[in-house]
Amino acid sequence: MKRISDDIAIVYRVAAACLAYPDAEFRTDIAEFDRALGPVRHPAAARLREFLGATAQLGDDQRTAAYVDTFDFTNRHSLYLTWWTDGDTRNRGQALVRFKDRYRAHGFDFDGDELPDYLPAVLEFSALARTDALLLEHRPALELLRIALSEKDNAFAPVLTGLCETLPGPSPTDRAQARAMARSGPPRETVGLEPYGHLGMLPLLTGDPR
Image 1 (cartoon, helix red, strand yellow):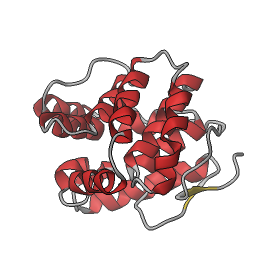
Image 2 (cartoon, one colour):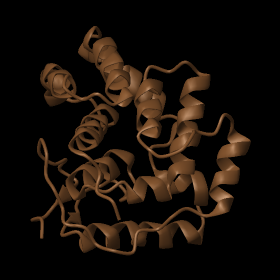
Image 3 (tube, rainbow, N blue to C red):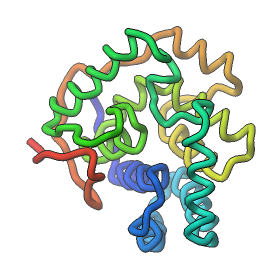
């Protein structure tokens, strides 16, 4: 399977940080992320820089409140990809195991309190392993989250829009099309890829690249 480019790896790494809880380290890294995106010519970079510029204008309390209000109080903006397709069913448990298996196949273990389908961790893995396979498999979830955030004109909407723009083909225009995409069956990666690191790793994803 084709490896993602350096530019897309940078996009995924920065997007992972943008969608994780905005701690003090994120605040100090905003300018670094913006500089890292500067040479990237993919349209997704402009989306992320739009978000970074807006969040840089907020105080710490405002930034935290915006994140909590968006992601912590409702599943309508869930960052857990399998929630969108499997809900709280037995199928979801099996899907979560497959995430962990995929990480291990590329030389990483998932370590932390979050579930392995947590989007920032999936993005970090995608950047390190240089593959968009997991994102492609769960594209309907990404698109449904993008639609939900865009409908509310949410500050995080540009991040999801940019992510979806890195994937091949047009995005669905509404929930019905996104759900139809889910029913059609996503592509699945069957060949392991050599991991690749860029700009460090989130605490949830540990291990030495093979």
